[in-house]
Figure 1 (cartoon, helix red, strand yellow):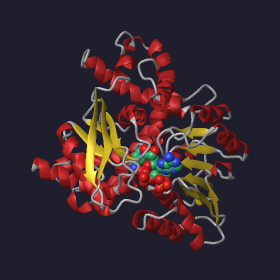
Figure 2: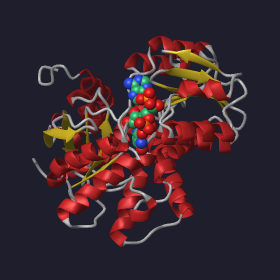
Figure 3: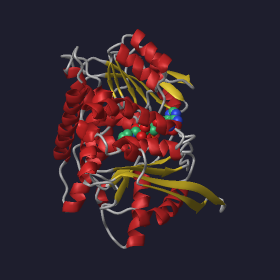
Figure 4: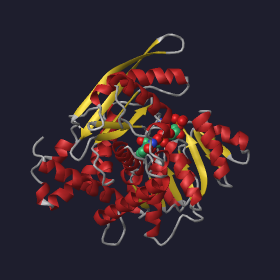
Length: 435
Ligand code: NDP
């Protein structure tokens, strides 16, 4: 922590991994004496840059842009871009560090990276977002490449932003290449990529439930967030027979005792993706639901909790409330949404718990499939991509069980994911020498 002062999120992410990896390395001599962890916590490269753009009033605005190129042992850097006012070095380093293990878990050849800016797309016009993206890419383009570093979306970066970023890259480089993933269908995007993180999250939950001889049919779900991951987690869970009770945004959460069904989810998708409105508008349309301002949904009753908004959104007392209310499974759709204290409560109570680096890896896995399709200049059908996604989520689940199963049969998915993700990266680093 002396080397990384004021980086609490980064230290939190490293601590969680170190807890699993250090004992594993001690038990496996081949991983000793290579300074693996010391090297993994040091980004290969950190790029920070000024992003200047002109707003609709003609005023100059200044933001800070970043790209963390964390680890390229097993492939080009890969990881999303986040546009949110809270973005700083600590948050992006935590995300980049997590990404290294997650990408390794997918079994695809992708290193880890992350980037973004402290730009807030909320309340900005399309033109302002476009000018920001163009300015951001005017610096970033020189650091990325389809064999070097391939960014994607994350919080605040969806299809619209990826389109503007891609357009500017192509203009500067005079090259049409798979430089970003999450692209639109008309210019190289993969089918199922928008859905992939949420769908993968639900496939993973389904796998976890199967270990207990049960399914999603008839289960009640508490979901937080109402962005990309939350929407498609809800969509797939509804399809598999679950009842969605809650969704949220940074203003608060809505609770619908009748369940958020397909039609209501369409309303939310239109509200969030097209109108860019607030989740509280749901109760104007469906007055029998309630809106709880400034709160998260974790004190409600539900069989399964899926935090799909942001880091550290599910705290110790939330975890205790979930346990007390009979929740049986917590599947992280977001990155690091549960605090270490919350996770400890889940483990102590033998609640099934999957860390984001395992359960939300379907997004980056499908980004990897988008890269393959771009290289081949060929498109797989939605069914083909979905089948590959399912297959990858099954493999990740199996890897977690292999490395995380305890003597009493309980699976510690955190330990399993960290060790399984570590092994491939560590083997590659050892083979490539002291670089
Ligand atoms: P979106 O921008 O589409 O949605 C984010 C959602 O979370 C919104 O509902 C937003 O509410 C809410 N939110 C964001 N920040 C906060 C905050 N500080 N407090 C409370 N609520 C907040 O992002 P995604 O759905 O893409 O990402 C959600 C999570 O999933 C992130 O942790 C991301 O890293 C992770 N993830 C995403 C992947 C992807 O493919 N998109 C892949 C793997 C992980 P509001 O609208 O009010 O801001």
